[in-house]
Image (cartoon, rainbow, N blue to C red; front, side):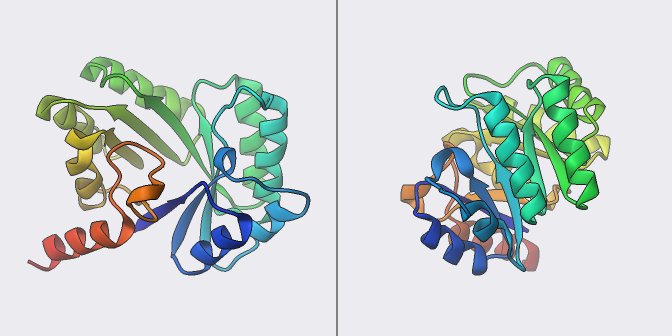
Length: 213
């Protein structure tokens, strides 16, 4: 399954994207929303991920409040950074359980891919945070970095391991083929939410070609 990551759009356009895709990630840190918009974004028959990355202008308590609001509105998944403190994570996770919303605990490294031992520790850290899915996304600049990330699928855990940047594109294709519940794509090339994302149509075409060959 491909998750379309939505950012830098008005709420009305974001809703149209959500309604036309099986799974969408709503980047609340990059969408201007007002009163009542959270319910509009997440009250949908299609699956959604509520994501609110840290931004300087918004406190953690406000982010937590909005993520819980998204969970209560009907988000299918909620994404929580593993670096957040335990109280932040636990409060959202408990709210998610009450609504049958799955939790993604995520780690992002925008400069490098750590060595395999560190990646294993990060993966354990995510699962110790009681997530349903661990997401590990790291900048890669070599085949070796891609190999380290892709090796995490061999542990059999529900994980999404992705390499950011042009050298990491292969990991976005390989993700669902190796067992990830889904992989991320952009709406189009101008709306990437991470370096190296394919647009959703192109990524689906590539994955379908591999599966049907």
